[in-house]
Image (cartoon, rainbow, N blue to C red; front, side, top):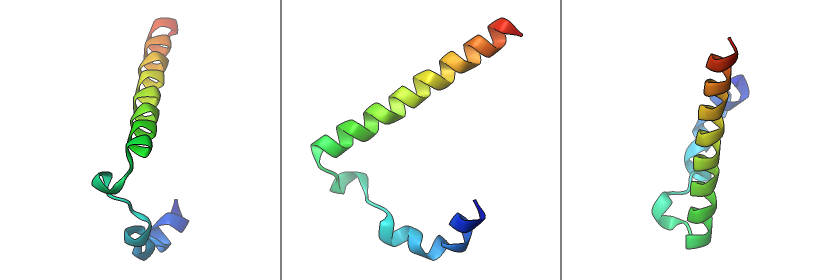
Length: 51
């Protein structure tokens, strides 16, 4: 995490705007975000259920 903060000035050059992505890249990123969200919610449910 400290490496990321040290290289904060490089964030802008590696950042791609959503509107500049191709349709395939948008679909892939959206799928990853939704998948991670679902896994997170399932994890919380299991945690609450088994504790």
